[in-house]
Length: 253
Image 1 (cartoon, rainbow, N blue to C red):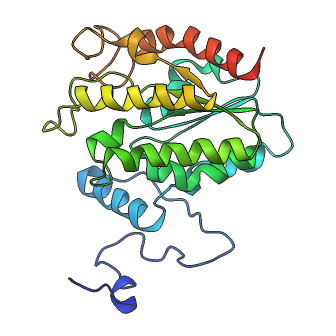
Image 2 (image 1 turned 90 degrees about the vertical axis):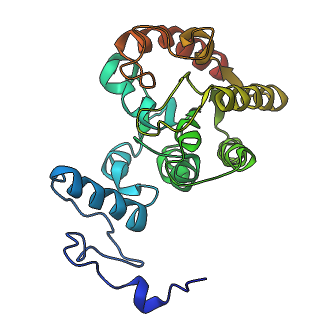
């Protein structure tokens, strides 16, 4: 097995535009960069995020500080489906409803940033929607038990801090455009069965978006997704009443 020595780990890649970014424990780790240019630039930016800011703490650092002292009702923790939600339905994210989705993220990344993006905001509830990118393998391979454990850890952290938990089903997808070798339908179904059972056993609120969005074969209904995975405004509109009902149930309102 190749050992990664300290010297090797700190060696800059030639042409790395992020080589001068801070590393280690520093007062301000977040550095602004221009949008990457082209496929090579995007690949370098993604490698930089995985190596230097795995959880992408910096994505919401400024917004989180701006919420200090404000009442937060619900934080929405998730991946691109949550990240895109605020653009499709901005009115939903008002009156203390806060979006903290990050495109492409898997459950280990969400778990790492859960303290800064959820607990520190002191919300009344957290809406956790996760699993799509774990099934796609965005950060490598994992067992379904590991994915379930990451979700359990987020839910347990929330409960320990007096935050009500809303667990969302994984939305339907017959295929992933960025990972065409995967056949996600049975794994989505298995994870959703576990989510529903885990929520029931622990007194959490479960919200079943899958049933509202899926065709009988486990794909997204026509018109509900732009690429078979990411909801369109029509898809988010179908989700909205379920979201509001779940929030009302969790908060007892």
